[in-house]
Amino acid sequence: MEKITTYTARDTWTILGLEMGIGIRKISSGLGHSSVEITEKNYSQMIQNKILDEINEMITKA
Image 1: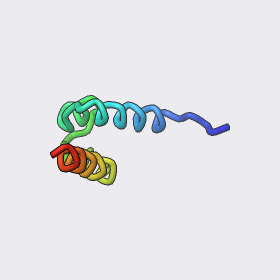
Image 2: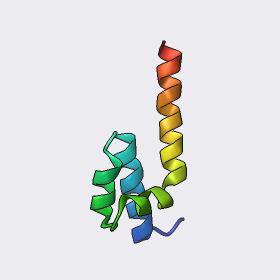
Image 3: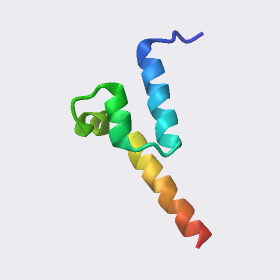
């Protein structure tokens, strides 16, 4: 059984927010980060994957 930490909860909250289409600025503010750049740095791979998924969906529907 995996131990659930506050970091797990924050990551889950962030992932769900991004998947729901909530803007990175709102998520960054909700996380209490002093700048969007911090959020982007911590979640850059996730953000890049979301962007690629959106682009691929647009292309495949065209």
